[in-house]
Amino acid sequence: MKFSISEISEIIELAWDDQTDFSHITKIYNIDEGEVKKIMKKNIKSKSYTIWRKRIAQRSAQKTQLKGRVNA
Image 1 (cartoon, rainbow, N blue to C red):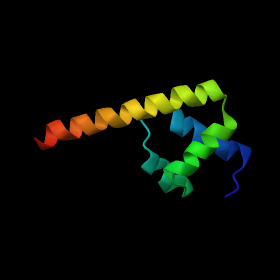
Image 2: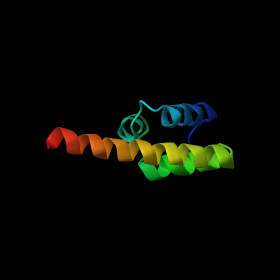
Image 3: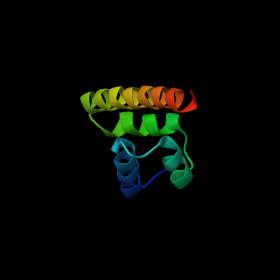
Image 4: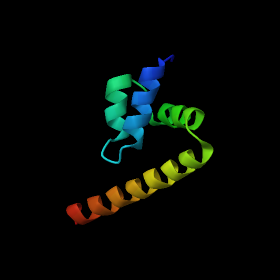
């Protein structure tokens, strides 16, 4: 899927924001998590991408832990 420069900037901004889930980006741009990761990898610095992926992984782990506590 082709996106304009401004759309790519918006996707990156949304993905970088800790309050935004991939599902929100999917609703707006009709792309899945894998596509968001590809856009991020292609359009930000390698080190920034690594830092972002680490943050996303931590956030995902925290959500899983919180779900376990709520459902317990």
